[in-house]
Amino acid sequence: MEEEEREKEEKGFIVRDKRHFFQQEEKGSPDEEEKGEKPEADEARLREEGRGKEEESKEGQREEGPLPEVTFSNFVFSLSTQALIQLGEIQDPESKGTLKNLPLAKQTIDLIGMLQEKTRGNLTKEEEALVDSALYDLRMRYVKASG
Image 1 (tube, rainbow, N blue to C red):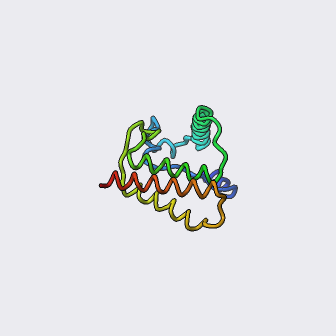
Image 2 (image 1 turned 90 degrees about the vertical axis):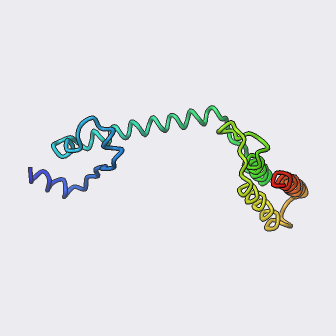
Image 3 (image 1 turned 180 degrees about the vertical axis):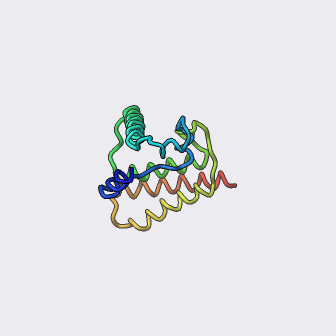
């Protein structure tokens, strides 16, 4: 027995997961691992769980469809939509409810304002107009929501 352990130590190391949730999932006691339960069985089980999670995430991506092209305009639209959700103007697509978080909405609006300042002179006229109109609209909605 000691010779086997020495051989294992020479070949590499063994990682044993001793987290609480891991032990609760096992049907046997935590001592079974020490008595001879092989770590390979744990690795195989974890690999299978990992595959299941990968398949679930791939299925979720298939349902959503392809992502839009990454452009400055789409980025501003995304931030504007987040601000509208935070202002309670539109439904949150995940929770299907309306949330109102004015400090977070203000931060998002300020972020768009910072982008406007930092990109001044580097945007096309259409992008500049988009940022200007989005900021004006969001700031007016914020004043209305907070007042």
